[in-house]
Length: 52
Image 1 (tube, rainbow, N blue to C red):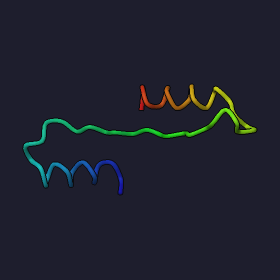
Image 2: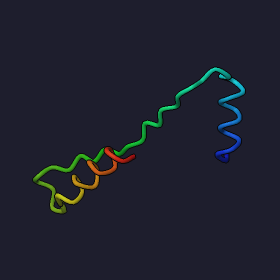
Image 3: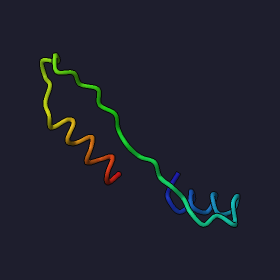
């Protein structure tokens, strides 16, 4: 579904809507015992949560 069609469907079904919240994010669950543990994974997750 393309963006314009999605917006049209939402506004058709909810004509009085004034706010849409997009809750996007990721969850990475590395542990210190993982052989490929990298703090960059955690930094990437935090960055996406703050800007996603």
